Image (cartoon, rainbow, N blue to C red):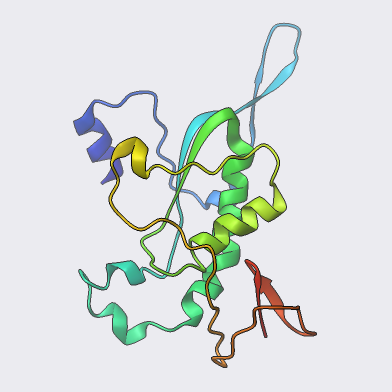
Amino acid sequence: MLIHQLNRSGTTGMAVVNHAGQFLPELYTTKVGSVKHKFQFDKILCDVPCSGDGATRKLPIKWLKWHTSDGMILHPLQLSILMKAVNLLKKGGLLVYSTCSLNPIENEAVVNALFDKVGRGLELVDIHDMFGVKGRRGMLKWDVSAITDKCYENEKQEGEKEIGKKFIK
């Protein structure tokens, strides 16, 4: 479907890859003198696997299998794909992170974790005013409902795992 849409729009210079994103290989080009240069991308759309809870309006059956833990289970995978995308991006490039989830653990917490790990050299850009995008801006804090439905917000306790700035057992 993506290839079809790109062809319709007349877009060129694109690569559509159907591969586990966190395992995309690094590519190198050889220039004169056998010097290897890492091939990097100008722009990357990182549309990661997600719980899909944002699609419940279109697919109400999703509610039957939905659970609060869905986003927490996918969080590490989403972060690893996003980390790989940053590694493949040229300096000054543009990276768009996308899910069809409403869960901040799959959205804001993943971006927050990326900045915790990489930080320097990245800039978070608000696109609402740039493109006239309608929607809510990212959340600055959120509660984490663990399987036990107990939320942790402060200090990391023994046996807890950090997700974003929250801790869960």
